[in-house]
Image (tube, rainbow, N blue to C red; front, top):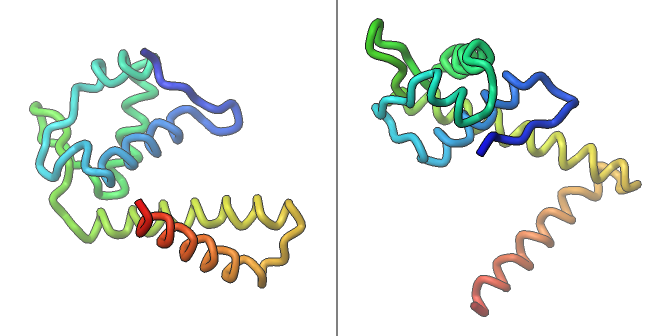
Length: 128
């Protein structure tokens, strides 16, 4: 089944985000060989050139590397993984802050809301 994409961002960027998320979540382990470009393109329902461009972005982040004639592998470089994780977290927080301010919530009130939500989540986990 083809992946779904939003119309507001280039598809290759969305694919790069999906692949990055998979690596950060451990779906592709450090040192693991990634599926071939054509295989990933078929899975995503995109042109191989689009997938190649997305993989080049992921490689530029240091999350994968190419072995000439053998394919792409997930990096074992923990520093690159941590940097990508922090960048992803920052992007999600930016989106959350924008959504909350669009609701009329003052930026200064957001940390308190987040803390209260985290506390509420901890209490729910304890009762389960």
